[in-house]
Structures are given as structure tokens and as C-alpha cells.
Image (cartoon, rainbow, N blue to C red; front, side, top):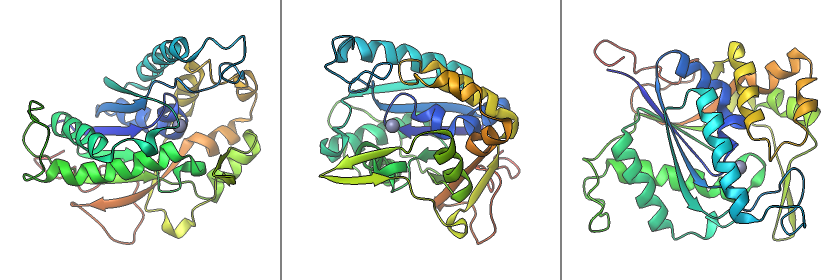
Length: 279
Ligand SMILES: [Zn+2]
């Protein structure tokens, strides 16, 4: 039986920036990878230009550009199956939760992943879209497994599916420092309050993935999102050690697992699933 992993994120580029090296590693191991992305990135900047700038192509054209960039990045990372939901940027925390949970849960039942990855409750740097997707994805994992969960008529979802392991992305201090060094500080201002990334304490990290051989692949995937990374040329110049800290070691928080547990750090998202007859 092949192992399956589904990543659920908000925007095109979240998959490359956040977990690209992890995805590339598991693709190389033969894991079937799927990605669900909530928006087409229509509200973003274009090569540093804010929406509304005369040289910005506008939300519809930007969405088309970013959809193509996402397809290219997915192909670099070895993601076999990509679904874009066409919600709008910066509106995910105002989406009808029932609608989004039903949508993700239906997807979980069709894809039937063993492992699901999404953002942590901090949304990396407090981004409300990221936080919303973390909450929707956790709720959808519950709904997908529940035979009594009521889907809309006509959706005909597959049989219930229980995800074995759900993970949040989590930056320990080492990754956080690498980001602070490599990029200008990522912030979001919400209701007049500035939010920025905060490191997770090392003891709260449950899972450390050694994806060092795959950081160049992750970087190539990041580079596919050309419209978003005017600074990509500069990224190429960073020392290898910094790249390794940025994307080579990837850290997660195991939200739940029905197949393993305990205090010891894991080094494999599929730990507990590779036993005889399952792996
Ligand atoms: Zn994002």
C-alpha cells in the first residue's frame, strides 16, 4: 500500500516556502503527495507592486499567473495532485466555516491521506488566512472520519476516512533566526496590531525532518513563484549553511496521531505507519 500525504495551505507559495523540502523528500521516497490550496493568490503583490499600482496586472490576471506558478512549483516538488479552491486572499477567516470544512472533509475522503500537514495556530506570522486554514483543516479531519457528518445533497462524498496523523508547521528558534537573517521581518497588521513570527520552544516541537538533501529542490520551487519573489536573486547568494537552516531541517507539531505518540522526537511523518502490511 502506498503512503499518502495531503498538504492544506492558504496561498500559492505556502507549499514551497513552508514545507517544500519535506514534500520533495517524501516524493523521492515514493509517497503520493496532494496539495489543497484555498486561494489563487489574487490579492497579492506583483513583483513588489501593491494591488492598484498601474503596473500591477490586477487580481484576475495575477490569479492566472500564480496558478501557473503553483503548477510549476508542484511539479518541481513532485506533488502529483493539486486542487485550488478559488477563495479570495485575506478573506478566509470570513468564509462560512461549514462550507470550508465540508469542502476539505470531502477532499480528505477522496484523497484518503495518512498524513495531513497544515499551518500552526500562529499562522506562521499571524496571517489570518493561515490561521483560518489551520482551524478548518483540523475540523475537517474530524468531519471526514465521522459517519454522521452531513454533507450537502449531491456532493456524494466517499466513505468516512480517518486521517492517522495531523501536523502543524512549527518554527523553532533556529529556523526563526534563519528567516530573520535571510528576509526582512514578515509581519501582518490585523485590527491595528502588528503580528510577526515567534519561535516555538524546542520542547514543543514533536517532529524534526532531515530534508537537507532537498533544500535546493525547495529553493527551485520557491523560485517558480516569480511574481512574489522580487528578491529571489538575492536568495541564491545566501550561504549554504543558511539555506540548510531555512529549509533543510523542517519542524512540526504533531497535533494528533492514532498510530504513535510519546515524548521522544519523531524523525519521520509516517512513523507508526510503516509497520508490516501498512507501509
Ligand atoms: Zn500564505
